[in-house]
Image (cartoon, rainbow, N blue to C red):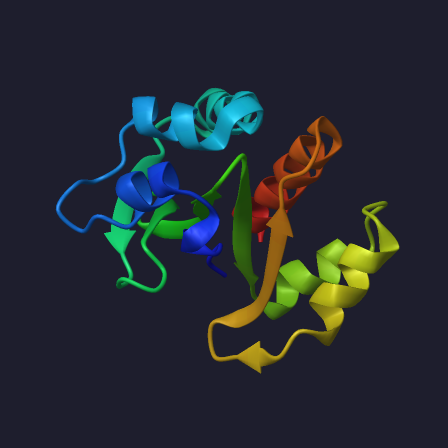
Length: 148
């Protein structure tokens, strides 16, 4: 789920230093133009669901920092920053997978989720943020996650 840390020195310095939890300023630098998409997702979470908890975790030198977004102690998704991009990773239980299957979300995304290996926690789905269109997909998936 991580990005290649050798992409540039700034990325390594800001996201792979265990002693320094990433701040918004760091994310703005690393994410570049994709930072506005991350800001929109965070704004949506706070407006739609109220108090969302951000829990930064360092997953080792190979993976660096990731942000776990929680709603009342419930895991919504993981945010994995990279160089001018980021990933959002969800884990969906059976009920939520069934709901996703019946949506108008992209067929490839639905197939990826249906075919993902099933673990005790559910099935994983990771989306690399490439465009504004994906922000709307993330919003739909968050709503499904919260409601199911």
